[in-house]
Length: 199
Image 1 (cartoon, rainbow, N blue to C red):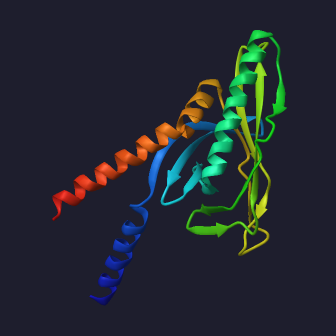
Image 2 (tube, one colour; image 1 turned 60 degrees about the horizontal axis):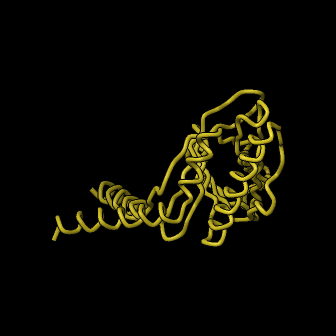
């Protein structure tokens, strides 16, 4: 009976903690590795602070984002759209890092049942790559490699993450301030409706 109570308590505590996490948006991206495309899921999450979450079948990562870093990401996407238009209008191809797109932040990740915290900040950088004389443009995310605090032989990097043309537009919409505010408001309204059911 005691074991059953402990299991119930752990389950209840886990639900209480993770029920505060909100998914503000999600897009499908891809990791390019060994000349193959692997589908990934990129999400903007919130639990009192913001996270960029990248999911794969074997790893989930959480990269902290401050309000100012979110604004920096929005500016990066504006520059991406500007360069995308220039490449298309001039029928030229470009592969270039977007200026001032670098973000340094703390990272944590899980692999299976194991959870790790980065020993120091990860550095994200964003680039543009166009093909077919500017007809198609993709956003590329790469990162530095960060060892874990627990074991320096276990490390993490995002890999070579690509947001294809239409997905990059979705990624930009996910970061938009008005869309974030709308998602937070809807979440609060849903929480209020549930609370009213159990008074």
